[in-house]
Every structure is written in C-alpha cells, then in structure tokens.
Image (cartoon, rainbow, N blue to C red):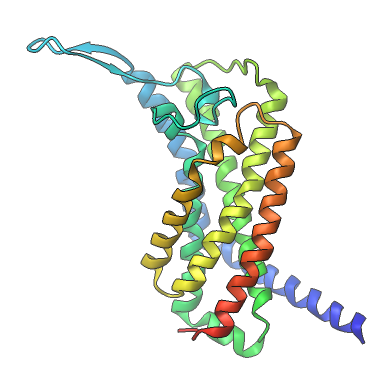
Length: 264
C-alpha cells in the first residue's frame, strides 16, 4: 500500500512538471526573458568599450573618466581576491543582474496561475499543494538557468564585437566553468525565495515582484563571494547544498501559506 502511494505521488509530481514545462515553453515569456538576457551583455560590453576613456570639459577643464570592461570575464564575475563590496561598473553590471530578471520571470509565471483561476481549479482536483510548489520551483530554476546561459552567450558575442580580451588569467578555464555552474545552482536558492514571495502575493504581481526584489537585494552582496570567477568544486557544492536546503525549507513554507490562506 505504501509503495502504491509513493508511485501515485511520483506520478502526480511528474504530471505537474510536464504541465508546467509545456506551459512555460509555449508562453512567450521565457523567450522574451532569454532574449533580454542575451542582449544585456552585448549592449553593456559594446557601449562601454565605445565610450571608455577620459574626456576634458573645454570650459571648466574638468576631466571625466568613463570606466569600461577590459576583459570579457569581468562581465561574468570578479576574482575571489578582488573587493566584492566595491560599487564599480564592472562589479555591478555583470551576470548577477540575471537573478533579478529571474525574479520577474517567476513572479509573472506564478501570478498568472492565480489571476486566471488555474490555481484554484488545480487545487480543487489536486489538493496536495506541495506538488505545485515543487513544480513551480523546478520550472523557475530551469527558466533562470536558461537566462544565465543566454547571458554567457551574449557576453561572448559582446566581447568579440567590442574587441575585449578573452584571457582567463589566474581563473583559468576550469575556474570559469565552475563559476558558471555555481551560479546556475545558486539560482535554485533565489527561485525558492521568489516562489515564497509569489505565493504570499498570489495574483498581486506588483507585490510579488517588489517582495522578491527586496529579498534578492539582501542576498545580492553574497553572490560574488560564493561564485567568484576562480571558483572550485567547493563553490559548486556550497551552491548545490544551499539551493536544495532553501528549496526544501521554503517549499514547506510556501505549502503552509497555501494551506492557511485563500487562493484568491
């Protein structure tokens, strides 16, 4: 009997995942977000490389220096030896911006369920709400991973157009691969947070985005420290463990909120 219930549970989760992934890839939202993620690094790298340098005001004689990227990998992450708390262009305008973009993606994806009445009808047929949270977290993680990969591709394109160096330096190819993998796995942690905020706000999209961005800002400063350009296997393990723990813990919180509150 217990084995039957386990099989039934797995089938329900598999069915929910199949439905959500089909909905996600038939909606224009994921493609719009992927396109934005691809365009952001191209615009940043090309425009900064064109406008970099020092200009002198002929009237006042004041010199203005426009900071620019000197290396493509600066748009991905900074080295662990660099000051991660600096507010420079290269430390702020990098791939970590995608975590905020993924917040918008997750919030829109979940809010649409409550605004359309899909969630209410779903929970009438399938009362187990934890399946819903697992499915949404997984779909949101997949969408966020796609956006990170698109940003990486865009950075390569933008770096080539802007004539920037592709020298990996002390990070090496291994460090860069581990860095990207760490950032992808860390996305699970952020998606779990965004899912909770979306469940709290339900159909109020503006509120879910506001809460998600506020929560993301609190954790934003830790991203460079956990996923530096010269990452190793330890960084990957930490991001994986943190993502899984947050997904499980916040998934339970999201389920509790759904059970204790109205679905409208």
